[in-house]
Amino acid sequence: MAKVTVIGASGKVGQSAAYAISRIPYVTEIVLFGREGGEELLEGLKWDFVDAFAAVGRRIRVTSGTHPSLIKHSDMVIISSGVPRHTGQDRIDLAKKNARIVAGYAEMAAEQAPDSILFVVTNPVDIMTAVALKHSGFPPSRVFGLGTHLDSMRLKSFIAQHFKVHVSEVHTRIIGEHGESMVPLWSATTIGGIQLKNLPEFRTFPGEDMIDWVKDAGHYIIERSGATIYGPAEAIATLARTVLGNENRILSVSAYIRCEVHDIGNICIGVPAMLNRKGVFPIPIRISPEEVDDFQSSVEKLRKVTDEVFEFLGNDEGKNLL
Image (cartoon, rainbow, N blue to C red):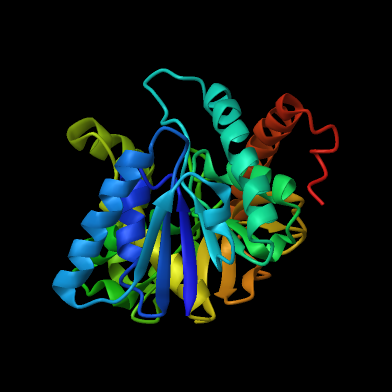
């Protein structure tokens, strides 16, 4: 049985993720948490959830509010609070604004639920995961971010459509930054257990076009519908279920790495990791030389921004996360 707190539940992604998580059988309590001033919205959302649970015969406790004590005894705390990126806004500016928010909530979670697992959704997610790790004081295994999980699922879907196969036949993943410097692992991509490069259709495979689409997918959806909601919500719920259900699945999330990827480390970034009730554990991997170069470039890009954010927050020791 598990208690999950969603910080930022008044936002579209937060409330949709909370509802998706409520379908996990062993989640028995959900806390819809937000900032002061949002009590009425959260209260209304709570009763809407209660009605929905009654309709489907689901028995689950729902609480809402803004007082830190609500977080106590949570098994998982999900941080989705933050300001969205606006057109033309500098990435560093967004990172600095959201870093203050995430740092405060990470400290709150550590104080109120010291045994919880901290799951970061706020963007830029890799940098915010590093901020949460630093300010919670938790061990790296108990802090992770959404990372490239949704990106990997998008790529998986595109590959399945291209080869006209069921999506379960495709195994692929994206590592690195959740952003422009993401790295597709074509060397680890298989369809029906057959490596992608060994299929005749590989000669006309539009890999670069697919990655461009994955990078642009969020902007494309936001421009047309105002926000990405259901994709992120289900991706968040999948990761929550994997951890709380002790499933031992290997998925691509933002996690702190030491030397698991060709001895590149001391950063939070998207990598394959084992997820279970104890937390998140990056898997040592070996990839192609070209992928190593791309991953190193992604690491250097994130490290630069992460260092600037820590300097902004006043963490002189920020360059060394542990």
